[in-house]
Image (cartoon, rainbow, N blue to C red; front, top):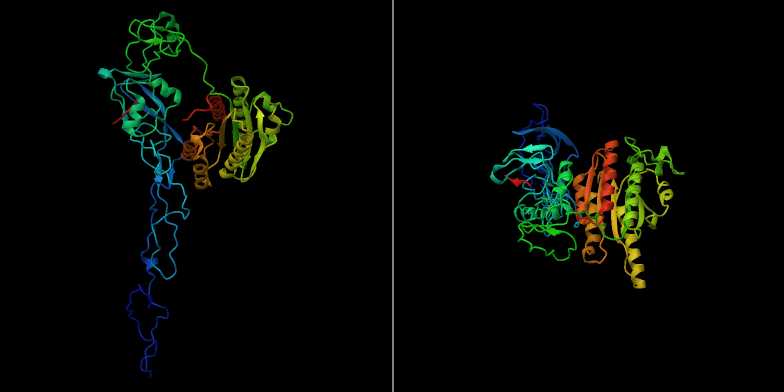
Length: 496
């Protein structure tokens, strides 16, 4: 008997006829009565690796109604996330009842696992790698575990939404209007998560917030335009009268020590860029829920309505919007274009942003499947080749590399993609020309958590546009325009 199996006593009659002469009994049961203990008792084991194997969230938004003391209104509610520990994949060797070592869902030693730490306010899980340094980061959902507070219980107004003090904060997201608390300190020291608000808003939250009291701004306030705020830090000491802060050339000091510029400059474009578009050209990009409308695109000589009257054509329209803004901000910009499905092609490389690149773009049509690693590999290989050439001549990059990855698909090679990015982004923060990688999702099948993880590893921003209809088209255009204004961008409620 094999070790580990127990004897089973079986009560069966002898198969020889009664009364017949025979010198041994033969059991009626012809097969072995032993049961395999693995089949009888074995239950699947979950992965024991540190962190979370997968973070799932349906990319849907429900419309819900908030009913409060001061107002009723509809708001967008994001579906909550679910963390998943996958099933062990290790085989049990023949003749054994167990396998060696801990349970794990993959045999790849470099497999990506999410940190998974929950945000105390919204419950969304950290999408950084397990064991990451610094603060946690996630895309954040509705502030389920938060409430409004105010000085002396005063009411709170956020545009048309009117709240009473101590009201549930579920309708709001993480990027709240500024308040009298130090926003950055609250997220860092109390919640332990990176501040999810855009960089420009973080700077605004750190400022004093007292508005200029001049009657010259009355019309601004009446028409909803922002009144210039004090440009000094929150809770600053009074600025001496007639002495402008260091580095400031215009503005004035109020009687109570606040500093106002009272003018609004242009957005900082951050210097010249080499933007590399890494665009998913898979067959799903042929969806016709929306179509491009820009005359420059649809009236081009080689534009094909049958091939590009679809989501991919809308992406090209958004690229046109991006490059037109960059051409005005920084004529020294360069652009490259990588198209990928299960293979990748560099369609053009380091073209001037104002150059007539459109005919190259319009030659790329939807086809094939989706494999992110091949597109990213092509982009990083191109960048490495450029850097080697510059190093050999002793020159330095005049344009900072900006990668913009866009897809409408799920991450079928998600683990490989994140592992690839971990390896290739490891040394970027120490370079004079580090890559910034932004991730954009366009469609209902995009995994927002995966896009967030890509942007986190790429030190960039991410956005998922779940609708691929005409409203989604406008959202995509606005997303590209916002990136064009700030291509270097890296991406007040209290917890109950």
